[in-house]
Image (cartoon, rainbow, N blue to C red; front, side, top):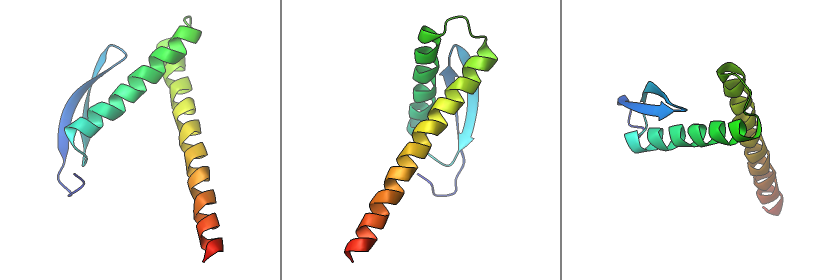
Length: 85
């Protein structure tokens, strides 16, 4: 979507309802929320005694870690492409 128009949708993450506003499609926002929900549940399975705040922070740390690793891979590939030119 990303045409500057704001889209509003309600999602469920770890049993809580959130209203999200963004420039992406509702489907995209639900997809992202689903990933967050899945990651929270995955971490909770391994650490069932975490309170919701610690679970949320650990989820954020895990997701950002994944993001940074992908960003590093992308930068490496871009450097390799430039070296071939």
